[in-house]
Image 1 (cartoon, rainbow, N blue to C red):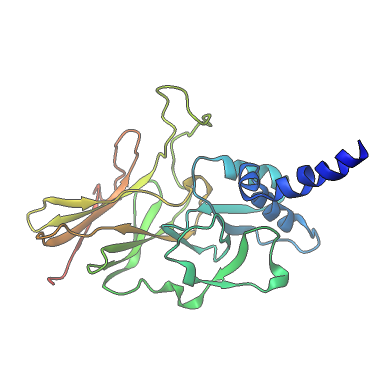
Image 2 (cartoon, rainbow, N blue to C red):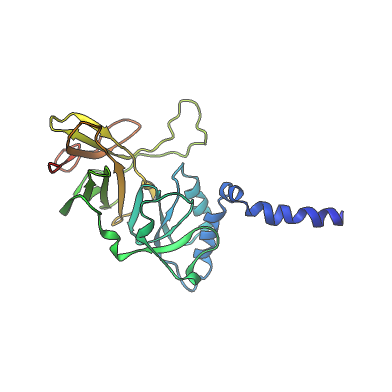
Length: 274
């Protein structure tokens, strides 16, 4: 027995729990973040911060909430493959390991201010405010939709087809009731998102050329004053000349669009002739 225990126990308690997929399935890196936040009650953690995830359902968010217990913090979840959280300007990122166009937007905090596991703690770098190359649109005041999500700025690079939209939350974000649904969901039960951004490229006659929809932040975690940027990929088909970008908000379940204060169900940006 002793020989068997000496042989097998390290596998059960050291090697197996340290495997990447095991840590993923048991939300181990999320719990490492919670342990880091709760490690020193005498040095309260900033209440507002971001944390990256693939947003494949609410389970990582729920795991973090449970691990945090009564800690007075408000994490915002976002997918770094398409989104950058500008405010709050501090985030746990780098996990899961994915290709992110915003990798260069972060300045790592010192090594002694890092959690265990694969998440790293970083602050948005001062030069991350740039929307990059191409045509830019900047608002003197945000244009708000009725649910509280407001468009702030945009940048479009026709060479790469990248459209970046910057958004700000004004007040409490209005969302329909989103029940907790098992994974996989029961037959016929919708378990997808209830808010998305549509972005479309149109020609000079208003004809649809290409679209790219999605919301790469978790809207249930957003708070008043939050600012984020996300990108859409809109490259015109060969031989077609884009003239306008149209974008707005809708509910993917019902297809219903949110409207702005003046009743518009979309915003339009006119492109310069190439």
